[in-house]
Amino acid sequence: MTDPSPDAQGRPRSILVVANDGLPYPGCPVSGSGLRAWGLGQGLAARGHEVRFAMPAAAAGPATSTGPDRPLLYEDTGLRALIAGIDPEVVVFQHWIRVLATDGLDVPVALDLHGPLMIEAAFQRHPDTDMAQLAAVKTAAFRRADFVTCAGEKQRQYFLPWLLLAGGDPTAESIAVIPVSMAPETPEHLWPDTEVNFVYGGMFLPWQDPSVGIDTLVSVLESEGTGRLDFFGAPHPQFEMELGVFEHLEERLRRSDRVRVHGLRPRDELLEHYRRSHVALDLMRRNNERELAFTTRTVEYLWCGLPVVYHDYGELSPMIREYEAGWVTAPDDAAELEKILRSILHDREDVRRRSVNAQQLARERLNWERTIDPLDAFCRRPVRASRGPSGVLVGDPREARDLRAELDALHSTKTFRALRPFRRAYARLRGRRVP
Image (cartoon, rainbow, N blue to C red):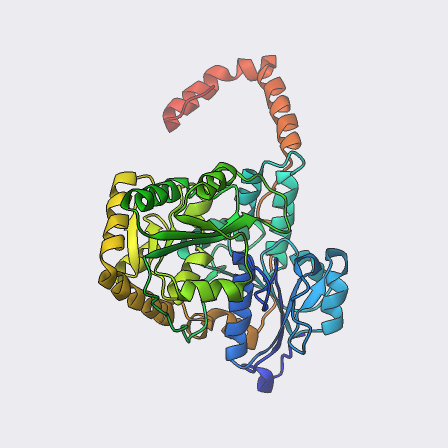
């Protein structure tokens, strides 16, 4: 709970970070959501806070840490009791789906938003997904949150209306931007004396389509007769989703002698491979989800010293271009991409130069000791927010259909039709049309 006494202001706190997915403990694969939660917690720990992590029990494996720094494991039904038992001074949730576990608990809540979950849910096309119910849970979570963060300015503009819909004051509410960040010390990048090695890493998610980039890369490697692609990818281990383009893409990759398909690997093993590779390919077809994504894997590539072939519409695109930490191009321009890839194969000195720049970008702009300021400030002086019950009604589509039927019935009445000439005259004065 918050201690309001003057001598308590500005001090480090005991903080519980509740992850939405698995965390990067040794031997464990990890998603972008897990890395985001980890980066926030490590940034807070670097500022002197006492930080503990909680993650879903379903995401834990045999290799999950069992030592004194082990994560707390939770089932959804037991999360409230876990939080109450730990009794932290602040709870930081990575995403909104479980925030309501703090209902009835007098604890300040910081809510971090890493991606547009409702857009992702739409891409998954589960027939039993009730978007109206998700919207109700989302607005209730925003209403409960006392402080809100996200990864980028595009995300801030997307999430701010949700905060206002949840009863936030449009004259005062804001969302703090904390970029996806890594440790301040970048790993040493090693340069094996082999042909140029590309990497692609990530889970198979239906809102991601890297097919143009990967197809073009494999074709260039095969036609040049040099270079390799190491493909680290597989379906999400926890959630069942459509594979989208990945089902056929993986078949194509397995047929090429220029590609090695590895599946998902523990993060520590993956980073060792990144340190010994040359270039990362992270080029995705544009859609609503990708425009909002502050791509975690990209930050990890840069941190490891991998210059990135990246699309031209993301929030990281200007940074990569400014630092010359990779190559930025339109994701659907295969001809331009082919030129870039051939230049990479034949100019290793340029690759090394961009590798140095990539790690410089990570240290200067994507370093959790530098980016954590807004969340650190809230945790040192946590203040409970006061919001109204709701900004506007988020209704069930069935209720909207009923309302539409009532309006249609009203429009058909004699009284409504009799007033039509007067409504038209008034509309002409206002410059509007009348149905």
